[in-house]
Length: 384
Image (cartoon, rainbow, N blue to C red; front, side, top):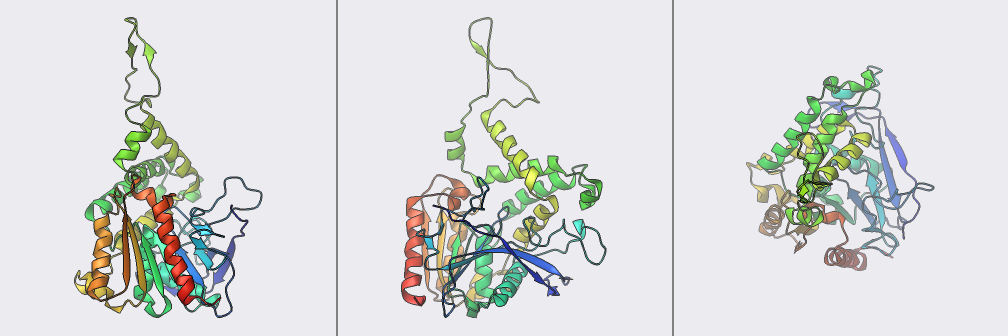
């Protein structure tokens, strides 16, 4: 059963220094909270979101149908991350298009939308911004930080940037860095956007247009990588949308280079169309670049063990057998780096057919695992 929530926003005068050497001032962060912060502030859990998600992690908005938070199956009263025991915070990343300051907002220095001039942001920049919001809420230490995919990278980065502020990290379907293949997928998606005639060098807002064609293609590429071949075959196979009765009495299919004929084509175009109506093109470019840049081992000559030496948090790391975008092998790299440093880490590889999207779904084993881990946190480290 979902609960009603209200989005909030917090303004920061800044400046917030960014890894690029730039800074941003007068920015706002959208966020939501669920549950109650206990007296000694020991039960706070930060949930970090992935590429096209937001601060709306759980619950519903009053009077809005189909407004469930993107991880509503995971977070709420009586759910694996139980908001009867934990105070959960979701924060929309800087540069996003769901309430926090981003490319579509006015640049106070120019009086026009940032557009392509919005500064480059990284996972580390997001973590610093999140830390500032938690400071304003009076939360010094997190019982846990958790996230899937890009959110898992942020959770990992929290343990490196603020090791003294994190007791547990839950990293799901994630990686310590992107492979060359992953970077390649992101680049193809970005090229689809920037070569759209309606992109106008990132300043399309001034032309009252949206580069929808590029966004559609970018989403279609991403959607293919989030699901496994088995799931796509089970859902769609080689089914066609329609056929005609030929003069010979057999079914003759209509062949065309333009028409949507296969069910999978229709599905991808539908999802691409939806995405292009609500997501910002400049935000897509920013967030995929942040994904590409994340590599904590780089500063240590590629040695992840050395990068993780400063970590003090306990870890739960979860991967899914058919996730080829963020494969179990990448999660095991994090596990090995932690074990080489003699850190406390639990690891589970769930045999699930759903590919990368599995971290959002209701696999009983997965949900039970997360529930058990948070039960242990509540029993041992959270003051009633």
